[in-house]
Image (tube, rainbow, N blue to C red; front, side):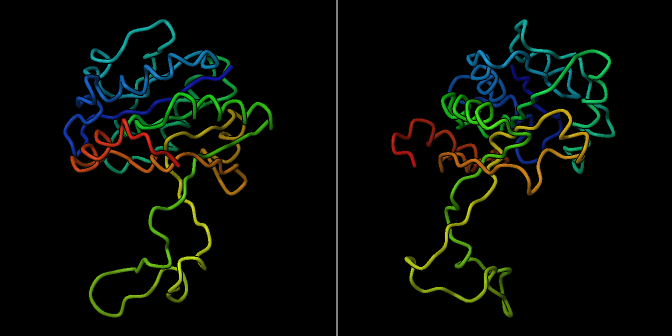
Length: 227
């Protein structure tokens, strides 16, 4: 069995209370939580938040745990999410026996239930200690530069004119992370280069931080063409 961790903090800048904005008739956070409640391999869902308002507005279920209170020092704009998870794990040691942990951001709502199930199956089959979701980059880094104006440089070597000569590059979507309790305590972070990079659908590139991101996510929700 797996436990899920969902961090949420109040005071978002791009969209006020973005975790509670409407997303296809649901509060954004509830949209992801409902998916997790449909996965039998997930035993508990721990919400890591500093907001009493969030706790009042989110789904209530016997599998959802709101006990942990995210400290103010770990709830600011510059809070390191790894520090939040570490604080939670230390808090949990005297209360729960945690082992296999799935980490989700509710701001990446386009991940499907089936992709989560497939990821869990892959983790169990390969007995992994850590896994990250990645997808193919929408724009190859060969066509990316480091700044605007003059004296810019290509991010990856020289410009490659023929796309058929491009190598494959991937980026970390943030749609799901997996790690064991011991992995995190050893490395003090959710992933490193030893983590397995698991490829998921390109649609998972959306991470909602602005109203523009939110509009893209809404329009892509029912996209039938997947990759």
